[in-house]
Image 1: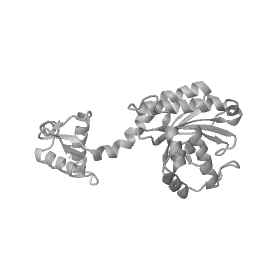
Image 2: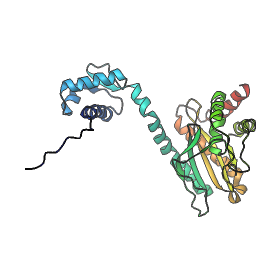
Image 3: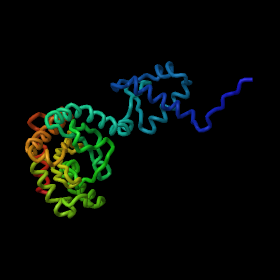
Image 4: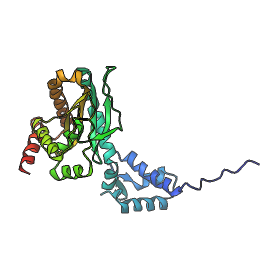
Length: 281
């Protein structure tokens, strides 16, 4: 006799049903168009009672909501809160990729895209230099904020309480003889970053490596990411001013792309407003 296939004791069957209903609404309601209960119950192999109970539960939890049309459903705010970060990063990477590649073509150095995460810099995209002698980072890698250009570019434009909170939790570890390890000195340095709109890592995180970074802002004028160009000091020193101008311009291009409601003239003023706010704080 053929053996009877044993059920997976660890699998919770109702979970599969819940996600089937949620995925159906996501697929059919991608443009936030209401999805009919009748359509869901017709297309999914569950009883109408089961689907109704699942929708009721998802509504109570805040992941779906009833539309103005009777017996129709939409994705609700809590769903977008849950998925927003992942969607945001994918969009940011997509928008930034071509700009990063242009920087690599122009300067032949490694270009990084980083974000703040738990008080550290996390690299989410890296375009490597074509040179065999290069400063290489990898997506997922982390570094301190105080010793990296990316970290300082992001830190400088945060509200003062957030800067203080991050610095109180993250020790200013000496990575090289040139690392800034005193809080007062770092705060002075961040004021200079706000003035220039760019941050420098002059062999502060890695001996022999120089890096220049500029922040990318969202529509609320909050720094959400930063670009950096990094390379051996022997190559970077001669082109530091050109790299500084280009990385700042690249960050502003992506800021404009992420904030379509802002005018071209308004976006460059973000850094100016941040600087003035910091002075008055």
